Amino acid sequence: MTAENQIAKKIIEEIKTSLLVQKKQIVDDLNDISKTDIHEADNRGTQFPEYGDKPDENAQEISDFSTTVATQKILEKSLEDIDKALTRIEKGTYGTCKYCGKLIAEKRLMARPTAGACVACKTELQEND
Ligand SMILES: [Zn+2]
Image (tube, rainbow, N blue to C red; front, side, top):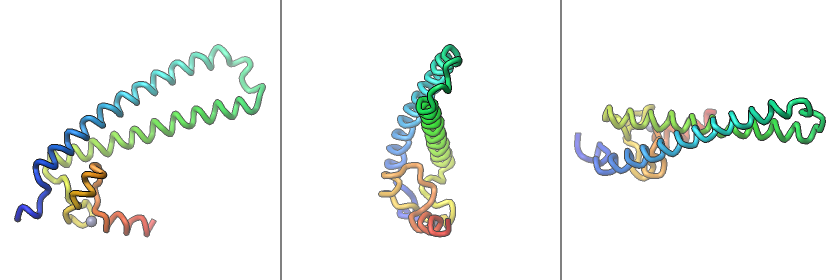
């Protein structure tokens, strides 16, 4: 195995640092969302008797709630991806495609540090989808 078959340690260190920063940010965001949820639930409780009188407001309320849930899901998925990437770094398998085992381009990893598949496999998967 030559140096060309491995992602440079320096790049992995940089990616690891940025992943840890991102992870902290996401955990903070998720904490903010759960705080907001509790606050909104309190408001809903006190306003409940009038709730549903105006269909437009009702729809807006549901839409706001869906957005929060959607955001939370996206953040949780990102957190999962980051954790997987960090695990791959620990195991020393980071930077290789999980489908074909080939090296993922450094440029792709720099742009998308959580990528677990090379461009070729990713493209193929999307086409099959
Ligand atoms: Zn691949």
